[in-house]
Amino acid sequence: MNVCIIGSGYVGLVTGACFAEIGHHVICVDNDQRKVDALKSGRIPIYEPGLEELVQRNVSAQRLHFTNSIGEGVDGSEVVFIAVPTPPQPDGSVDLSFIERVAREIAGVLKKDQYRVIVDKSTVPVKTGEKVADTIKRYNKAGADFDVISNPEFLREGCAVPDLMKPDRIVIGGNSDRALALMKKVYEPFNAPILVTDINSAELIKHAANSFLALKISYINAVSAICEASGADVEKVADGIGMDRRIGRNFLNAGLGYGGSCFPKDIAAFIAISDDLGVPFTLLKEVQRINADQKERFLKSVREALWVLRDKKIAVWGLTFKPDTDDVRSSVPIDLVNDLVKEGAHVTAYDPKGMEKVREYKLLPDSVKLASSPLEAAEGAEALILATEWKEFANVDLLEVKKRMHTPLIFDGRNLFDPATMQDLGFTYKGIGRRQA
Image 1 (cartoon, rainbow, N blue to C red):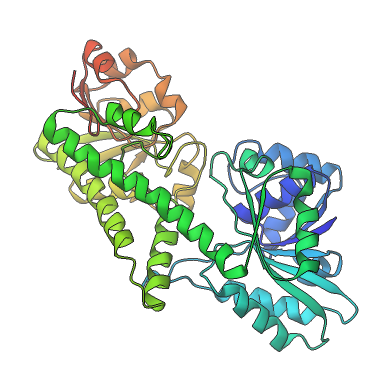
Image 2 (image 1 turned 30 degrees about the vertical axis):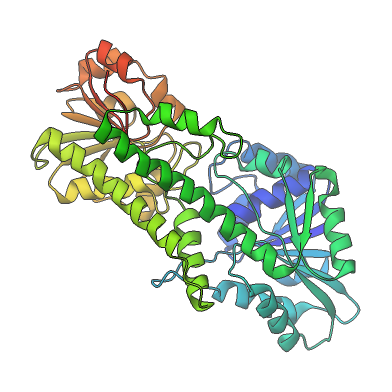
């Protein structure tokens, strides 16, 4: 099939590359000409395992194309996906101006003898599909025939390619048999379960799913505080809970709290949506509170161990909000480093993939040193904070780390290391909700 993806950011680029990989002819549209030029040459602006090879292979095979022309994309495609940003606003609601602008631009290039399926792929509030349809009708001077579909994405950064190539479900929201048939044809090669719903239900599924996962994270973080107070081990508690098939072990890892470009934004949006509908979602407000408190509890433990943070030399391993990505948006480790600096600490940080984005977006003050390796970051440190659970950190030579540190004190914000092992190596080790050996 011929498919157009408007927006070549994280969701759009991964979706377009994977669609091309299974045989569709894909044209990705982006209004940033420099990005378009880079993508045409096979260079991608984000780090996602397997994505660069996928883009290069399908560009070479001429199944994946890039342009800055919406007209070119819409004219040559049966199905048009909208995958533009939906950034948060100060009140927690979602800025839909990018979606509205694209809907108007699509309407302006539709032709009378064309039928197009317009698909909302971006994460949007419920009833957005109705607004997109109304907007296209209003600006569709040619009177072209079209339908609007909701098709939320469920990609996890760090494993987005396998998530899309082997999805556990595909959600398609719409009420047009003609449009639904084309959407099923798009996804037929993936051989995955397809759930067909109305548009409003499909839009709610994404927010409800992410909010529930965030709830699980906040729940186990709240339990970790009880574990610390009682001398229990949160890892053992999580294992016991997770063995219940009704619950499952995923997203029951205690840590610094959730961050990134999805969970904070989606939960705030779901709260705003619920408030607008007159059904306040107070449970999610508590999830937000627990998440914010978790970072403060961690900082408190650092203060209690070091007494005064001013002039202390602290190493931080990890700046991205999770491993296997270079995404530093709404990253808890970034917030943590900034809090340490505000209290006068001298911070040296290292991340395998995120430091270029940190520099590009100026997310940390100039006083923060960015090291070239974990060992360089640990040199002379009075404490080391593990903030992102990269495999590189799990495989590091801990005896060499101890030798380089001024004081062998580790705060494990992701419970990556085993407390007994760390004690045997001579470290003072503090995890989250962990029983000390």
